[in-house]
Length: 498
Image (cartoon, rainbow, N blue to C red; front, side, top):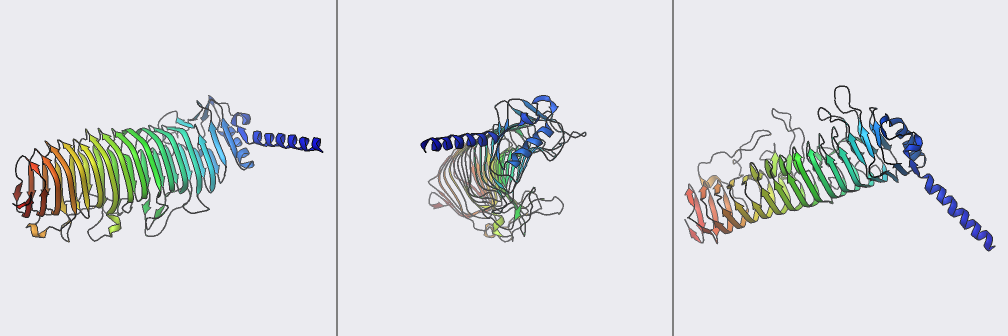
């Protein structure tokens, strides 16, 4: 009896070995050459069909350059599959050589369409032979889910992947859940490096974005009066909910060169970001809200103000702008859901910014602490509480202009809001602005059309100017001279009214 038990055990182990071996599908076994010359598109489709036949497994690419000369939705298209791994041997490349005759993109690299779960991508390098003439059809990695249990793509892991010269994004995730991206490099992309729309529970650790044509890292979900969107497209919601990229984390993000922002967050909630380094972009970090319009200078997309956003350890250099938080096309009587943010930013270093190091416009709910800056700082048309705690500013002015009241708001669609003129300080609305531990070296402080502002622990060797202000408190202030005051009342300097 023992002999038969042992024989049964051996046969069971042997059969498991066969099944395990069968689940590893080598694309070269289906005719893929990987020589950089042959069009391997058909062979890869056959290998994918075998993967689907096995209801998952490992699709394996040995070292080689797998040229794709055929246009289509995706060079490698996984549709409705689960428990699948695409594994490239280090040095293997999916070589995209399928631009259309006009030079625009002819298809995506790797596409995963839901529903599905348990998708892993390892060591994948998708590279276009030539860069498209402009932003067009072609994401290096594309995940087409749907923001609903049972319809989403869940449990996605992407490790050590590269998207290079893509006509659109390096990687885009739409309607996906429980995503892990580690050590991703989007290089020379026409659009975003790494983009998330209507996802939840995302964890990103390690992004190196080089010369991305749009945002290097973006968490963006749009607003509409009713839910809209379908698999393969973007999604919009009437509120902030769990599918607004909620409960997500990103760390160790580097963005160098290109256009737009190092990181953008729009229409999101419950996101933590740390260790972000940006240089050579239009802006380092942007958080914005908007109400879309078709009038004149239109705002094409809408998104509510983001909530519960924590960003720490940020370095921004050699950009046109540093940190931006603003609302666009949000009228004075608009719902506070479009201007009342809840954002906490700490340990922010700004250097060599060409315009504004910090530019906060027409919003409230912003807390910034521990800032080192050599660039101009501006707070304009504040709508709600703002605090600045711990600022070391060398060069560049610090300006607070306008707290919005019923008539205190100048507006043009999609344009920077302009504070209107006031006849006297009594017309200025009271806000809640707190500044503490502020050190200004060669940096004038200018306050214009403000009320209800308190500054504690100000050290300045430069001019302090106040115009059209009331109820301003400068406590524990050490300054070269007393403030210059014009058309103000109830201005207190170290306990004494001026």
